[in-house]
Image 1 (tube, rainbow, N blue to C red):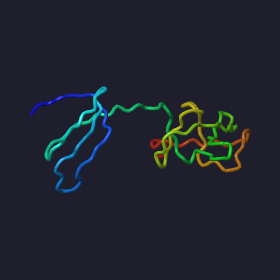
Image 2: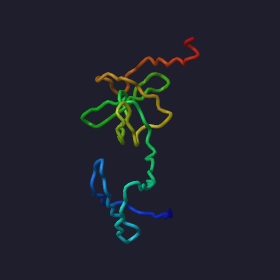
Image 3: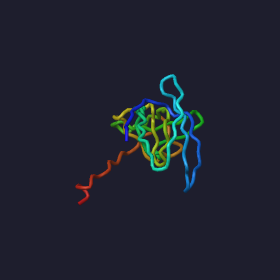
Image 4: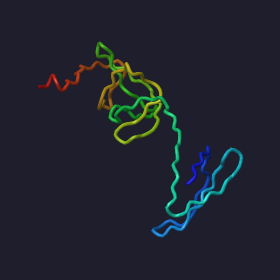
Length: 135
């Protein structure tokens, strides 16, 4: 069996989909040429799709404040003073979401912030205990 490597872009696929699949037609764009490729039963193709990472931070959704002026997160400083920061949201991962801009790794986020939380409010910060401290 010969192995060929092509940098191609899949632009269309059609065929019989079921237990008795006879063949599947794939239309690929290889450079400027459109190639029609046929996969027969028992044949396979390995596909590598390079993905780029957006560089955002992933935070729990319960750190978000969804308000009329747009999404915000509450950040607390060393003195316990709250600042609401506008954030740009990226991908939604269910219980977590990507934040593309507006916060940094150094920011301490408030989890489950109350709806009435405002800039300048004071909070008492409770640090999460490590597993070793809890023993």
